[in-house]
Image (cartoon, rainbow, N blue to C red):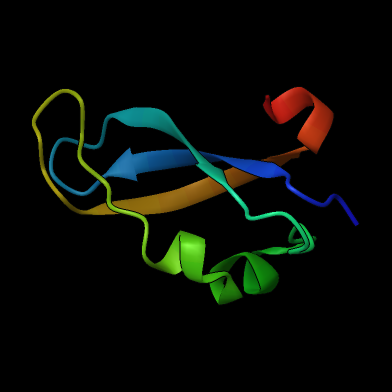
Length: 74
């Protein structure tokens, strides 16, 4: 679908519950996810490190995501 896309993750901190955003760029040639199941199949998402900008807790929950096309990701 969107080669070289990025995914904007909406994340809730596992410590203080602060909502924040984190962007993950997908490699060229990898199709963008269309639902949560596909999102979690991407190694770039599974291996993404999270750290709350407020309390620095390294755990979080992805609550929503938005795919950005390659032309918008740059």
